[in-house]
Image 1: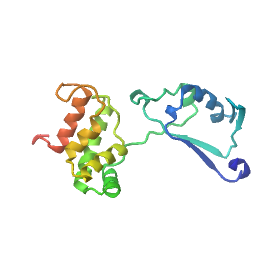
Image 2: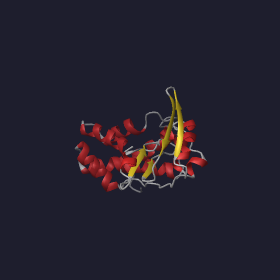
Image 3: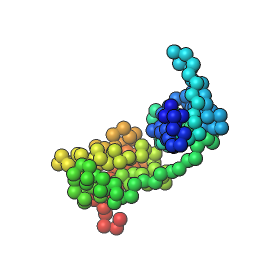
Image 4: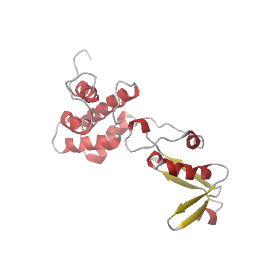
Length: 192
């Protein structure tokens, strides 16, 4: 309604984690993303027609649904109406500074936490294992434990290991792969 009332202005509609919307809703949304720019949605209260003015743009985020429980695969018809932009990981220095400023831990501890998260992220990228990708929320969770007197190693194991399959002593399990990366950062071997 605001976009219709102000055709001289641009408006953005954003969806966070669009792949968590059930696939049947994706089909209903398709017409608003193409030249038709309108769709009809049927609810218990009746049918609602949505007409989207040309001064409205859409943005959405999605995670890699193959590794994220509770996510739906986005079909080609949906993806063909989107311009995909892959966002790289936050630079180490910036994510470390985020932990320092948001949580109040020291730079050295913040850097270790981020390095651990980056090693885990890299393990996913290189397909060494498949685990949930650590987000800045995860590094903040680990930093909170450090702020409350826990070691970086303890904070990392409590943040990054829960829910992973296998055990830390069995080779080639996701849990063992993550634990190896934690140990490599907090107590690196001399030849590492």
